[in-house]
Length: 431
Image (cartoon, rainbow, N blue to C red; front, side, top):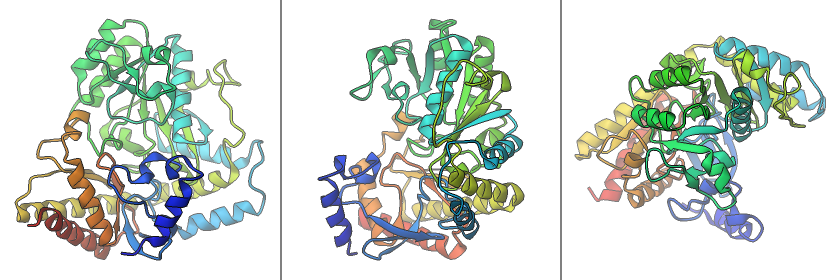
């Protein structure tokens, strides 16, 4: 496969952009080689600058549920830009978007639009602190909530120790306010809470993790967290930037029957445009300025172009429940095909899948948290990634990412992916 143009662009980019990319995972550091530079996309396909065609399993990290360049969303954006690109003033679509989100996600009574998932999670933490009058938060090892200082914290050496900054530029003071627990470990959470009575404002997690690969919550885990938060007056925040409107119309919280106090949303509600939101209980959200004292603002919040795209996307999902039936069927077909190939080849790798999210982990142990995800053979995944890329399958360039399916994938595309997976496994293991 010729990627000469992409290689040239990457070399040039490194002179002007840190690392040559505007988000680290794009640099292919985890898999080796040079990233492919994407020129266009349509339906289930992306095309690079060398005109190579790939079946796509990233879907812009989740939002392209209906596939790339969906005609309905394209038309909505085209119509919106006829009236200018940004106003910095209220618009009708912001009201319609808020009303629609509230109607689709029962736990959300009021919602504030922002510009990214990171901005949503940062803002949700701030309002939780303002609401409770407490400073500390609990997050989970392996969950990613954007690059806000409070989230870039490595776990301490024991269950009750403070974390340490996971990135230069994050202060020790911020780290002291962030407690980290292993995912799927209720006992560890209870230990943290007991050791920090009446000081924890919020507990935040991805209900289905997408940022250490796809990792599902154990039976009763989310319900156990809800119980702890209720008992301790802690604000429970579900980060549904990846899972919201993807795993069900009402997100993972609908699927697992859990009611958070706050929810954060991201790119899906913009149909792929830069957008985010946070919302939840009215008494908490009424603390947000100008209704209350917790300040948060943004010139581009509720941007009319993003609102037009997002309204079209969410209205379609709301009116077409068959989308979720198709995504479930596609996810199950892909998982069953991968598992059949592994049985045929005598392999025992771990496949985590729920609905239209999945990750193939190159480890033979169950993956339920970050340590078990890290048991994967990372060099082997890198070889697998490139073998799939050579066969025209574009995946996330890291073992620690979920893949995302879209309704643009037909049976013929899924058959191609399943065949490519088997051929790639044979190649990298010389079976």
